[in-house]
Amino acid sequence: MSQTTEIVQISGEIIEEGHEKAQINAPLQVVRVPVKHANLGIRSHAMDMSTMVELTSFSTLGKIQPFLVTITTTAALLVDLHCHLTDKEVCGYLGGHWDINSHNLSITCAFPCRYSGKDKSAAAAVEAEIAKAMEWKHVTLVGWYHSHPRSHASPSLRDVDAQLDYQIKMKGPSDNGYMPCVGLICSPYNMDGNCYESNFNVFWSLPPPENRPHEYPRPMLLSYTLSQEHFLAQDTLEEIRRCIEYYRSEGGIDFTTNFNNNTTYLERLRVSIF
Image (cartoon, rainbow, N blue to C red; front, top):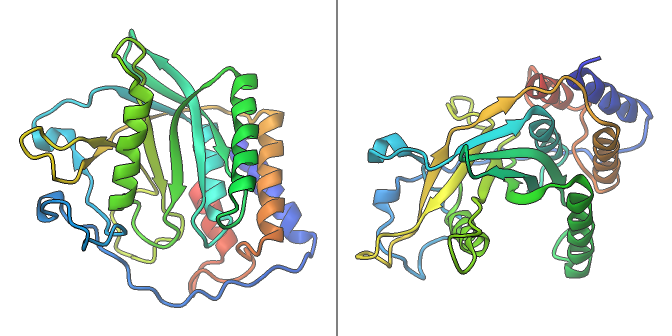
């Protein structure tokens, strides 16, 4: 049985249990269009930090991507499912390995954060649990992910700043222990029918040049390769089930309702993970 078939079966089982769910009747939303980095100007307190910024490819700047990125299909699947379960923004961590010889950052695991609102104590407990899970799986923190439920998978100014901050923290005091850190954005229910972007964008923040320190960091699009895995481990299946159960109790998406006139939310999920 393939991993996508397994996940669809799990989703179907829980939906068919007949538990009452909160129905999402999302109003029509204006899709925010990402702006070009060159149009941002210098940093200003008046700037809306939710402004989305267009991702820049390294080739556009005449540069080569500084490292390779590989994502296992298991990690991608778990991120995709997590982001589809609710109309609210979600986040999580990415675990994997850095191979300094091949300059390849391998993302092998995703660790969804399951807590509501701004409960700092709940957040701390979840993060402590994730730290233990990473240690048990013998992986290292290599990045983070979050969702833009109904808009582009482009980073906001807030995301770009956060990503640069994470990169600096991961770098440490010297280059000897350097390890890349990436951000991943998933847009599960983009309302722009003509959106050309993929569901996933992996990005990295380029610091402003020394002679223009007051500019915003530039979000750079990272190309990546998917590493195919044909089966899901039992602990991944359990994580999927916990995520589905959690968002069912927290008023997540009712997959039996329509996403649009032609597609249910379940069909939207099915198409995405296949």
